[in-house]
Length: 374
Image: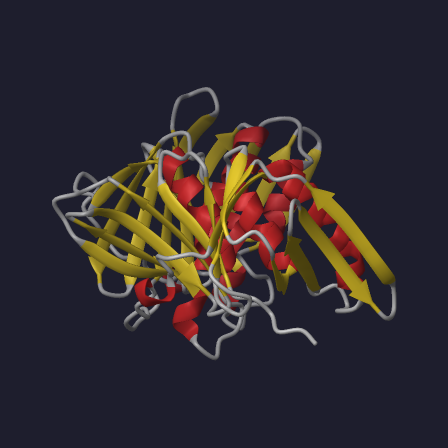
């Protein structure tokens, strides 16, 4: 293998695939990045065995020239080295030794046997199971994935359930204490119901340019493939039936309060500092009292008491109630909503409550379970 590539092009390509590479992985070959040069393109792959990124750079005679095809598995350190190089980089492989030259800089690096690198599943590029706007899918992730559990006790709750059928596209995520849900009128001739690891979706959102179309391929029961432009992401699905969350979502309420989202968010942000002090920074509990205005407060023996009053826009139904909840859960839910105003839907001091935007192009909601306090 022998090629010359623009240093910035190489650094950006390596950055696309290195997110899943772990230099301490128990399988040595997965500590590196797969590199294959063909006559038409340079292919890079990073994998941790459950998730993989594949990216290709086309030969254009300017940013990339390939003199001799070949393949190898690079040590991940090549990524750090290439970021600091300012000129074109020449890579030449002899056996398992890789010569890397740029100007007066030269490295001779040990590589891995490419035949030991795991093969990625094949799929038909022109036949995606569904195609979505990348910007829309990114919004869906932001409104749901944060509510996933970080405990492996119930593995399915570490994922986001994607359900595409004749009624539309639904995404829902819950850790059993809170829930995020979004529904759109996107339909498709192929029905899908999958549970995607929330961490995989977070990684996808940070790596893909989601201004482009996003193609999804479901070629097997345990594998989902995302493609956008030159980047492909492979992730393993969670197995099992996601719990029916529809019965958790209330439909009748004693009170509905419309309040400015940013003002409510800022008030929560202030009060959470005291709440965190009593909970070692894990989120803490705050109290909301509604009676002529919305009063958010926290009272802890360690830090003292703090109160912020926010005037609401309107209120229908019961106009005097108190409810306690996790400050972190409320902040996460408010940040997931984009509208200027949110509707706080109350059905009882110890019953789940909802937050919904006053206006949205999607049907969306955030559900939070209250906390019992003395």
